[in-house]
Every structure is written in C-alpha cells, then in structure tokens.
Image (cartoon, rainbow, N blue to C red):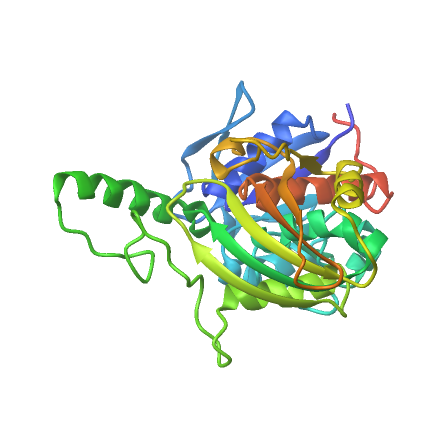
Length: 346
C-alpha cells in the first residue's frame, strides 16, 4: 500500500498528541510515522490510533532525509532550527509555531480560506499554520467577505488555557482546586491568577499597547484573507480548558442582512451554524472539544453602522486551531498534486 512517511515534531505536547490522533482518525495515507521530541522524552511511548504505539525519538539526532511531511509543533525557537533542516533534506514542513508566519516566502494557510497560497510553498518547503484565534475567525469571515466585502473587524477573544500548553492546563486545574481548600497559589504560566479570573493579556505587550496575540490576529488576517481589512483585537485568557470563543463585529462594504449572512455561513466549508435565539440555542466552549467545525451563533444586525453584523464564534483550538488545520494542509497538498507520489510499501 502506498503511503507517506510523516514525522510529527513535538509529539509529546498537547498539539503533537492531537496531530497523531487526527492522522489516525482521518486515515491519512501513511506508510510510516515518527514521533519526535526532546532528548528528555526520547524513549517514551505514545499512542497512534487505537492499536499502535510509537517510541519517541530524539529530534536533535533525527535524519529527515527520505521523509515526506513534517508536522511541527515544538515551540518557535525549536522550529527555527529544525524546520529549515527538515526542508533542506526534502521534507515538506507544516509548522504550527509562530516563527515562519510572517515570512513573505512562507505561505500562511487555512485550507477553507486560501488553499491557492499553497502553490508558493516551494521557495522554502515550509508552510505556516496560523494562530489558533486567527484560524477560526477567518474561516467564519471568508464566506462573508466573498459576498459582502469585509471592511473592518473588531474582535474580543475568550481563549482557553490549552492555548498555552499542558503546563497552563495543569495550572488552571491545580489553582482551581487550591481555591476550595484555601491553599496559597502563585501564578507561573500566566501574569495573574487564572482560576476564576479573566486575563486581558496573551503574550507580551508591544509598543502601541497591543499584545503580541492581538498583533497576530491583525497581520495574519491580512496575509490570509485580504491585506485591506482593518482588524482591532482584544485577546483574553479565560479559565476554560479547551475551546476558544470570539465575539466578532464586522463592518461590510456592501449591504448585508442576517438571513443572507446565515445562508452564506451555512453553505461554507468548515462552518456550522447553530443560532436558534432561545435559551441554550448557541455553542459554548464546553460544547466544542473534539469537534472539527468552526461554530457560529448569535448572528445579529449592528444598527450603529451602515453595513454591520455581530456574531459569536467557537472552535476547538487544539483541533481546528492547530492540529486539524495542519493535517488538512497536508491533505490539500496531496489533492493539488503538490506532494510527490508516495512509494509503495515494501
């Protein structure tokens, strides 16, 4: 059986484990899978599908020659070193970190939004996965932009702690438990206590007062969707384990009704509309873990501007916001004939 040799880098992290899970779930055509991580994790075992177990290999000593696809999620500094090394060996790299996203020679891709940009990957043999908060927003904006022309976006995010990795999830769990037993806590992964709190800072502050996460949503949306779209973002970390939510307000160039927007969203790939205007008639972060879709609810006319709408958007940040999008990029490369044909397994 023909299949691709796929290396998963950062395999022991939250996104790496999700990558392995999704490769198996979607029956991606693999002949061999390598799970790669740091020397500290090398030799440990990790599941791939229901019946296979992989032994984790040391990334520093791994030879990428002969491997077709590298799915990277090890942290930006590590990708900066090893992604070019893998690409130079002939491996096509799909990188989940922030390191390559704004490189003009590296396409930044969400398959439902800009699959045509994949044709540019040959310059570096690296494709960047966008930020999780950007991915779900542009999936929802794409069908609306095509029909009505998005002019300006104001977005407030409610981002789960899993966006900060396993250590961040552990801190929410231990600090929440500590509240009930009156144990003292000291924030380690966040600038303030995350348990029973909301923190309007994700990543570091920049000179204009925006955080790096907010800046990412601005520049990534323009690179993926349209460089003329204005975006103003406020990114907030909330005490939720998995699932990002966003309150999105959009100003359009052309007239738009709620019914027209709902119809466009329902017809769009990757979008699921649940908007019944009754108690519980919307999706929350608790509803979305394990789901592939970007969910849209609470679509409303904004009467304060000429052509305006607001809506609520929720997605599993570990799946569509990271691992699923990366695997979909690989699937799209295959569908477009941009990956060499796999060899038959011996």
